Length: 294
Image 1 (tube, rainbow, N blue to C red):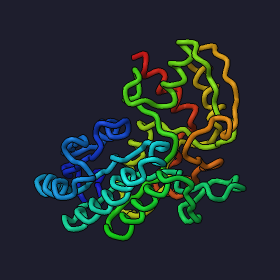
Image 2: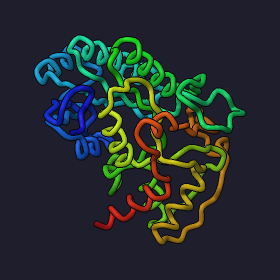
Image 3: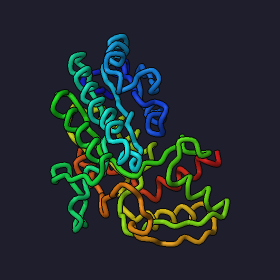
Image 4: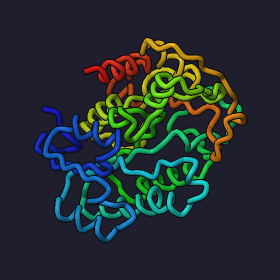
């Protein structure tokens, strides 16, 4: 029987951020008694109310997919980003520690980037160096989890896209490219940022498998392989059978407010050795596009 950190399949699991792309897929794949809570029911910026909600449910495991994810807006709203990703996560870690709950928390490849000459995948022990307010807020949050809550899984990931983005609601890079191709809008995509596009469905399944161990700690989990955003856009169009001209541009030409890492590919060897290797990002993309037609 698959056991979850010492608990069996009857484990009581609470998912925070249940309305997002990752939160929805976690709700689909987690076994046991799962309570999925959107922000309206459990807001990280309201610690007293959050504590009351979690005390009511008494979860064995709390899976936190809630976050402030507006990378560029965070440059103008640093307090808002920190309130959720840093202070809010610190409060959550404290609550989980006091309840004796396992905390599963998702972080980001954007904790890296300061080493602009880096071209080999980052392992969990490599030096961090975020370039943006968003990256710093995510780093502060994961540090709180690791310091405050002894029984934790911190999962860094990258380039997420999932089913909630279909139809434009929630949004993701895949849907944005498809929409622009259909409407024949100009496609200009950066070609000097390399990362790993990752399906939220694949990440959710991998997270479920990881939680099934007692091997607490920090893990990198993404799809296998890497590409630039420009190459990813080309693959999306090719696999969808759409023809559109994509213009490669530099990060400087794109002109985003927040700085992004030029290279943020994550080494997922620790997870692969414990559980199993992730499949290539190309296969995950093909499945996602097929799911849109179902």
